[in-house]
Amino acid sequence: MPAMNLARPVPPVFDTIEAERLHRKQRLAAGFRLFSRFGFDEGVAGHITARDPEFEDCFWVNPFGMHFGQIRVSDLLMVNHLGEVVVGDLPVNQAAFAIHSQVHAARPDVVAAAHSHSVYGKSWSSLGRVLDPITQDACAFYDDHAMFDDFTGVVLDTEEGKRIAYALGSGKAAILRNHGLLTVGQTVDEAVWWFITMERSCQAQLLAEAAGTPILIGHDMALLTSEQVGSHDAGWFSFQPLWDRIVREQPDLLD
Ligand SMILES: [Zn+2]
Image (cartoon, rainbow, N blue to C red):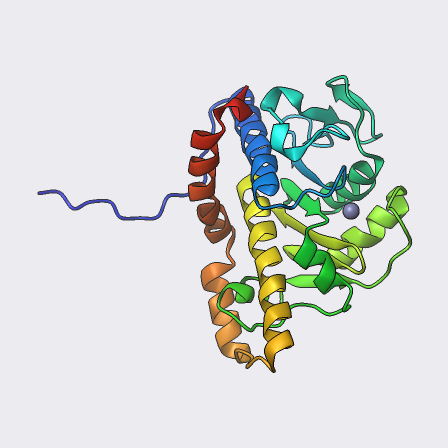
């Protein structure tokens, strides 16, 4: 009897640009539905972007003012490096362009970036501290996320976006002080997963510090755990059951 292949799945590769574009757009629409399901919506705030696989200075993004919970593949906009909507006929959030255009420009490895005003992320952001390695899950961010230690109102200027991208550095996430979380990934799946688990790690640290003094995981063990739960493939893989669930529950997201 042949041995079963028990290797963990890895991100797919595509034969055509069109197939890769459609895949990114489907994952992006699913990301918005999941953000809604997890309660990360706050009025019109928040954006997730996916770099186009062909026009690499363009990215796909949600229309300004459309609820995350209603976004379909066909609603997504493509925006160029000047902030012009080149596919779609709805407006783009200027803050989405100001932040994401600069992150995508500064980080060629980044395919997707996610940001919202989720409750625990913005609460934690007001403390002006990075997350500590207090749980196995939080170790995904150990030595791999940054604090953007400034707040100057709604980000409408690409110069501010540049400063956020600079603070992000080579990491997978940044905490924008008094604002919220920003995560990035080499796939849409990864960026969305990092956001979901980072929001929960903010919640966990807020709860733990409200109750007492958390015991920190030591440096060497936090680094080891980071390699286990914080890799690109681990982030991608963690998203797959969420994708399966949201597509089964809300198949219209693929329209
Ligand atoms: Zn924001």
